[in-house]
Amino acid sequence: MIATGFDLNDPAVIADPYPHYAWLREQAPVYHSTAPDLWILSRYDDVATAVRDASRFSSDLGTAAEFTDNPFSPGMRLPRRLAGIVDRVVPVRTLLTSDPPDHTRLRKKVSRAFTPRRITLWEARINEIADDLVDDLVLASKRGESVDLVRDLASPLPTAVIAEMMGIPAHRHPQFKRWSDNLVDGLLTDGSTPRMLAAAVGIAGFFARVVRDRRRNPGDDLISLLVTPDADGDALSLVELIQFCVLLLVAGNETTTNLVSNAVLALLDRPDLWHAIVADPELAGAAVEEAVRYDSPGQGLLRIARSDTVLNGITIPAGARVLPLIGSANRDPRHWDDPDEFRLDRSRNDHLAYGIGIHFCLGSALARIEAKAALRALAARTPHLAHAEPLARIPSPVLRGLRSLPIHIGADDSSRRP
Ligand code: HEM
Image 1 (cartoon, protein in one colour):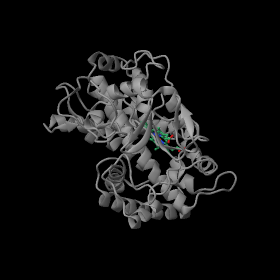
Image 2 (spheres, protein in one colour; image 1 turned 45 degrees about the vertical axis):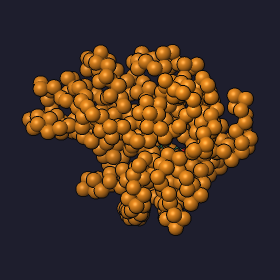
Image 3 (cartoon, rainbow, N blue to C red; image 1 turned 180 degrees about the vertical axis):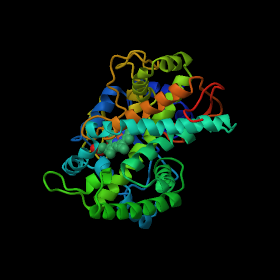
Image 4 (cartoon, rainbow, N blue to C red; image 1 turned 90 degrees about the horizontal axis):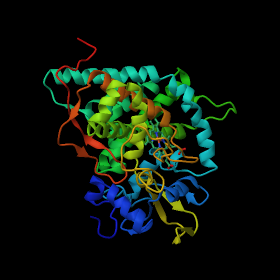
């Protein structure tokens, strides 16, 4: 089993972090890792405190120029000159990484675009997009082609949805997806830094043109809404708009892809649960909620201790980088019954997968609708679904998900199209 210590970037941790988290929770709930230099929190209560308490734990990680030792992508070293470019584009000091009062001002301006009412209006269209993708993968399988759940459904679904919500024309979607993938891979996994920079520059120029266009010709899409001043006459600047659009891609695409892949994998590994969903698609909502707890797409967040702070009797020094492990909190037996069981009948769902407090995920309603749409479409058309090997994991300690999940579709399963 686990000896002593915890190495965030150990391939064994990335493959299956949960036994390692159990060791941390029992033996070292406030663990100081020296390489990378991080204070790692693993118990539910400590994780919730650090994520929620913005007065003690800051989200302001500094600029890319200051943030040269990215603990999640150890290979990434940005020369200062290039870091300046990233700072202008990537949301290093926007909503996600700002504290009050900046955060309060920005959040007020953008949250009107993500009210539950607005997001629910998209549900029917999201179901259609998921149905179309599942139809395509059934047809591909019937033609004898290999089918991959990540490539063919989990990955294209959130990009197609957000691109449509933003009013991006369909012919631009593939380019849009490449930029988004290259940005996230470069920032958080083993992707190439030059590709990440090219994507940052490409996408910033693209959004700048879209914003200018929507200011002149507003439509009923998300970007048109965001360029319009709010009820107080307050509007986002061009740079804020570009950074927020990029943030939506960075925060929303990969996470939702991973939720869909993790949910499908968990269900196919438990055929009785998969059959329950096939028999009663209404259970898809419970499956999505359990999947985001059981195998959280974002396993950890970063915070900076504002002053010396004592947790569990240990002093975290002022200025230290803190890593509250959401993935561990969501498996803490102090908080959950049978935390390592995947169950569709949990009575509580106060997991921390979407965060807690002022930075609570703006896109959680959207992610839930998308993941439910994917499960329902699969359950309706591919009841005999099974997964094959080998599956490939994303090589990241904070993004938990799959690069590839080959699937088999039953001979009798059918698409809606002839
Ligand atoms: C399963 C999918 C998702 C997961 C697990 C997830 C997780 C999270 C978490 C944990 C946070 C809090 C970060 C913090 O406290 O530092 C967050 C914030 C955020 N998420 Fe999500 N997210 C998902 C999907 C989405 C989607 C689809 C969008 C939008 C299209 C989105 C947009 C955002 C934004 C804008 C923030 C920043 C909010 C703020 O700082 O006030 N997320 N998300």
